[in-house]
Length: 238
Image (cartoon, rainbow, N blue to C red; front, side):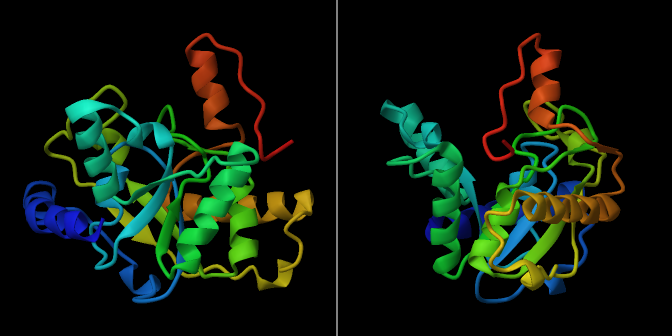
């Protein structure tokens, strides 16, 4: 992944800074070495590019293994692209999807890397911040690594759903907040009330950084309603 990440930075970073002039802040809050959990809002496909842009370390994200199982040239290009932007496929060899994602995240952090996670679980259907899933809290407590809030700004306007390429004339950015300390909850990884409290605290911090309106509903449920489907039960919030 590293060589492709370096190539993307060499080719894309100058273009992104010149064309969109991103407004970034708080990079000093991200450790220069060692593991950390970066938790952010998810507004746009462009988040994968503008979030890691001001850092000199790659951010790894957990993604569906569908991105890596395609056939032929299209499948090869898909694997190369998602690997290049730091997406790691979830190992689903056993257990539930939530447990598989947890174990994949722990493995990435145990390797001393930066792990990015979107607690909303999916891209927001609009420019608001939605309820977080408690998997992020379990990961924070089990890994015991620094938790860094990360707020994407203006990426929804830059590249909303259905927009195939970023718009011009919009300045996106990312704001990294100060590390959050949850050491007082260590050992409570299976306490649902504690997990919900931690998750809500994380989402509130992201809201303060981003300035978004908060909606106390899951983004996936809202998207399902908009598409005329029945919302599916949330696996990590039973």
